[in-house]
Picture 1 (cartoon, each protein chain N blue to C red):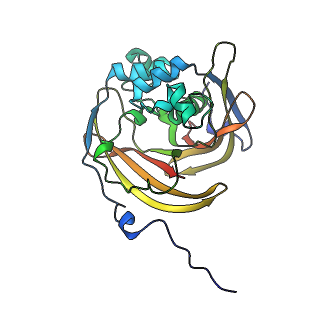
Picture 2 (spheres, chains in turn purple, blue):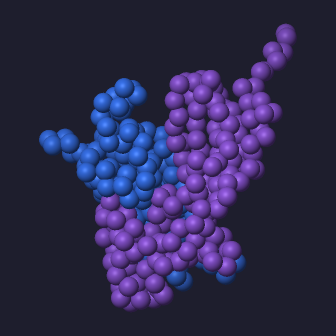
Picture 3 (cartoon, one colour):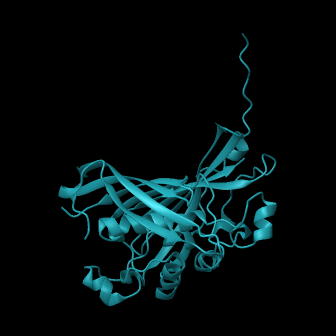
Length: 156
Length: 144
């Protein structure tokens, strides 16, 4: 029995993108932007939009909704990422993960950086899939990590 | 009433949350987040990409998961981790065809770590036909 040599679609050139970070993007958490987000997703809890309600719930300010982060990412255009256009036919968002390390509130100025955290391939039901894991990190004014996000981009 | 750590048992369910997205919801979400990928608002574009209609943004479905968990845990500040996988597409309601997205959750683990009382939930985002399109999980820190 011969062992077939598996030819990886991912080259060393692709792997060289891993760990390259974008310059930080700055975002002020605006009350109006949070209000529009809540309206879009049907989030009716008044703590997000009404300061008095937030204080009544024991919070110092209106909190950032848990998935508001998807709208305030690092400048994606500046992310140097590998190109897999020669492979497969479409891109899909396979899934996302958020870790909440420190609370964030309306009025804060946060910065976000993005990097390619990993690239790997996996055999799926419909064939080979290439995963590009993007990591976003949001930091507050003192440099503490507030939220860490990971997104699995799939090329298949 | 927010869940309390001492009352929570592995295997228990959290209250179901039922959400509905219309095409207007998708346009609002696109505007609110800056995600203008056309498969979420242009039916011809979506169909050319092999989809039956425009589809819900993955992050919109994740917002529904987050809402169900926050409601149960006693607020967004309780969340420590939230994971969602986008395994299947979800369509918006159209006149005459209502599409509902239901979030279910079950407690899978409870433990104490670094002074926090943590609970892990297994989550399911379910479409109108009962198909789990959006499995996920969450970790929350509960009041004692």
